[in-house]
Length: 303
Image (cartoon, rainbow, N blue to C red):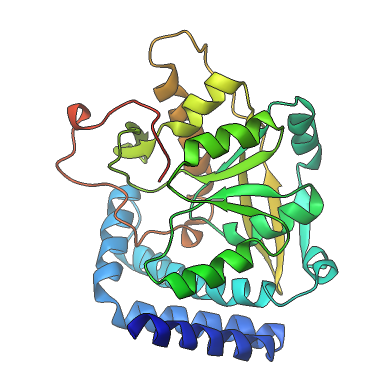
């Protein structure tokens, strides 16, 4: 019953967003985010602790402002994603601009597939939707939501422009097949994980358990790894950025997987301080008590 009620609430919200003009969508998204900031004390405290560790020289007042802005941003992301799900394809493309098109085309031209990596940063969900229109559909690695009805709705939104979702079961095999066919796969690399493919790399000078699967697959297949970021331009417009491919280390060298994973993480760390309000500080990215012996370096799966 709870799942059905949640689903009906999301459907009602989707219908409301569809009837709203763009500025009102962004206003209510901000409002919902700020309400979450006010009442969700648990995640607010996590965000404050994370920011204090990442930016110790910034004042407490400045860090609180970033946390507040981050909550507002994720409210906007929710509403903008719902709005994007209702727009025709030409309207979607009219709302975005692309930076780095040629890097993507050159990467595809290698015929080894492409691994697109990013984090819970900016408007990553929108980026995947319009990527399929500008280039070609991609596989999106995701974790299923606990609510199956809401998850089905989110899956339809993610797949509306031709993308396909890759869930945990059988992910590696499907990713391999997608790359071997010369297509792209998008992966988020900034969540704490405890699976066998976890590897410790530095993120804001602190060890963070990170998936090693991207690096392991890239070294095995030769697929280029391109970091991607979706930044707001204001007025409901966005810049979709494709960075230079991450330079791979020698696959035969000791620690190649860890080094490649670190290089990918470093690109994300470069972006977060520029726009700290766009990253998911509410996530427990760093877990106390972890140690190197508890983290593997295998390549058994994605989160």
